[in-house]
Amino acid sequence: MDIHQTEEQQVEAIKSFWSNNGNAIIAGLAIGFSGFIGLNYYNDHKLQQELNTSEAYQTMIEAATEDSAAFEAAGKAFIAENEASSYTMLTAIALAKEAAEKQDWQQAQTYLSTAIEKSVDDGIKAIATVRLARVQLQLEEYEAALATLTPKLPASFDASVEEIRGDIYFKQGKTELARNAYQAAIDDATDGTNPALQMKLDNLAQVINLNK
Image 1 (spheres, one colour):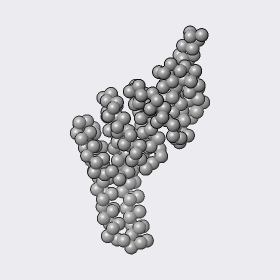
Image 2 (cartoon, rainbow, N blue to C red; image 1 turned 180 degrees about the vertical axis):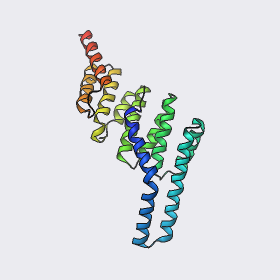
Image 3 (tube, rainbow, N blue to C red; image 1 turned 90 degrees about the horizontal axis):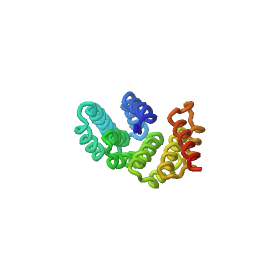
Image 4 (cartoon, rainbow, N blue to C red; image 1 turned 90 degrees about the vertical axis):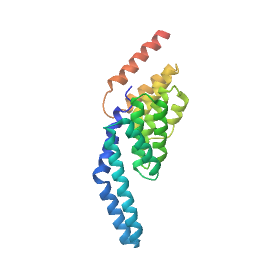
């Protein structure tokens, strides 16, 4: 199952933004702080740290296309060395994707939990939350997955949340709850009709009719 289809573009957009603008933003903030409070040494040092972190992140991401094992090792080291950095959440999500592609769901769960814990962005946190629930569904940890989806996420994630709830309820044999969740997902969708979701709802209706 592809657990990264709809959110991947959002992650890539954020990564691209930080890649193109992160250093300029950091530099602008550092210069502004320097002029405002006069702590030149502190801000120069802080700026250099952020620039070093940015460069380390870019190097690590580039390595991902060359060797997945090396990327995982580099990613773990990056998280351990840069816990306070905003790049940590992106690194954890990238590592979770690698783990999921190998169907190492336990490891993916660990990385996504780290991404949620370290997130400083509501959108990234929501992406990690939705993915974590899908991973927990794969692990058949149904109650944990429902609990993961309990916090209110941005409205743009409502359809994804309801679809996952529907999948969970279906696995639990709670067909009426599953049908309600799938219908809510269709109603909440902002990008038009989702054929795969509609198929889930249609198949579920057949199951319910057969059981009557």
